[in-house]
Amino acid sequence: MKTYRKELTFRTKTRRAYLNITPQVDAALAESGIREGLCLVNAMNITASVFINDNESGLHRDFERWLEKLAPEKPHSQYDHNGYEDNADAHLKRSVMGREVVVAVTKGKLDFGTWEQIFYGEFDGMRDKRVLVKIIGE
Ligand code: ZN
Image 1 (cartoon, protein in one colour):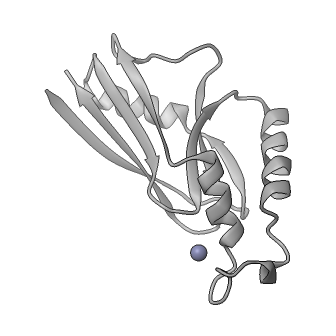
Image 2 (cartoon, protein in one colour):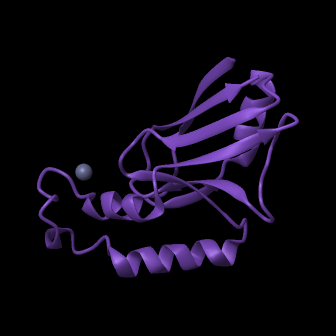
């Protein structure tokens, strides 16, 4: 069995952002040389998510509005976590959107369902944050 590990780094210009990282994961898979196996992609920070959904900008605005209803950023004082930090909402948004995805690797390609793409969800950005890609197989 072969294993492959790569860290991707993202720094968004805004506090919250949704990035399609499928091209970077595709590139990592090609670099790994693995043809059959599993590809794990996870956020390495507790205020960011990796999730799979549709690459449609309207849907991303819907996610943003929905998450702001569930866990509004402001007022910062509404959260017990916010003392030295102001990112309680980002921790909650990350919990809803999830930590990681696993995609099957078949014949050297990410074996997606219809319209599936991999996204990085940033909820407390404007600094370097890491995403881990781990691929195992042969
Ligand atoms: Zn925090």
